[in-house]
Figure 1 (cartoon, rainbow, N blue to C red):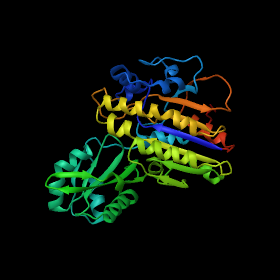
Figure 2 (spheres, rainbow, N blue to C red):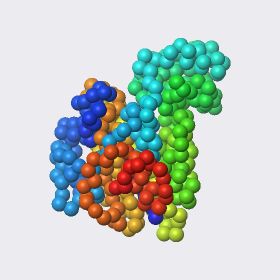
Figure 3 (cartoon, rainbow, N blue to C red):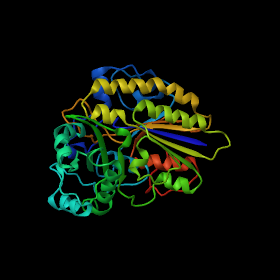
Figure 4 (cartoon, rainbow, N blue to C red):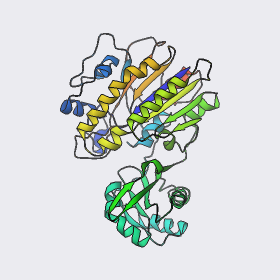
Length: 389
């Protein structure tokens, strides 16, 4: 038995009813990108993406390959951690704290006291590349770590590898996670952002980035599956969002292309006599490279590249396997904001053994994903009263 879930990070499909509460009433990631760029997406069309709602350039075929619908987020927030936690059967009642004006003095003082650092630079919401360009030289001169945040609930520490060795950067993050960034300042993630370079020319080392996630309030979907003998495989940043707990195999990737390739490898490696396996993939480029950078053309290219990979993914699936394509939030690259957006997420469910109406409608919660995966493997999992697809 094999179940594959691919999260298209940031690929929302229209504002939710509560989007105005988040300043996102005009957001429509897929709708706006397709309207502006008109990428050719024949395989998404065959799956039924254009059946979920009317989308520019996409038709709804008479017999779509997938069952289709959309899911509504009910957790408070719109970041990756919140979205993935809800996909895993958890719901966040109170949002993770954010710091648009930087961290309060008591947080920075606690960080300095706990780590022994003499000072920090930055302490504001900023682009990672921009703040390194701005403060990199001063960081090299003083040795102070660069502390910054973003629109997400994150405490980020950037440091040059020759100024603060990587092991010490990770130690600073671990201290921040366990001693500083705790309720009421319990951010979703503490992130190490190492970089190299000189004379104002700096490059972040994405492969050595390390995330320290907030501990889970209760076991998530993949942990419960693992406890019941299901092999769990993370591709991309999935494991980072769950503090690396509950996964038998973790595959770090730097791009959509690497994520698709690692997913294909995991599918092809699954033999008939292997234990039941759940592969959970995050494709980060939509969000990281294009949504946050307001690049609709790049976003459209990434959609087209995934579309081209869909036939290979479907052909690799065993006959009794299932595949879900979905997202964790929106990130509309056509709006002035560079933040995530509060949107419905698409739901495309390929399962040759499924029966019933192809139109799955609007699901009341992302938790329906967790309920469905657990049901596929015959595992009892409390998903707070949601229904199966």
